[in-house]
Length: 92
Image: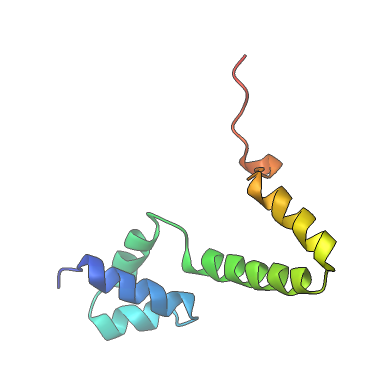
């Protein structure tokens, strides 16, 4: 069976929600390796789940701040400062 882009999107969504790649592959009639190959071209479902949890947690923390602190956080976020680990090395 040839895997379409739509099949991959659906499988990815199922994996993000916690279903194992193996069970998704069996249900689709493809190999686990085929799905993992297509998933490897982007963010892994497990990584996306982690990021979603971090975003949820950050939003909860933001709600606990007073209005002045929230404005300050939003101003910092608007600057789009990248974490050190993601910054591109400076050309010398």
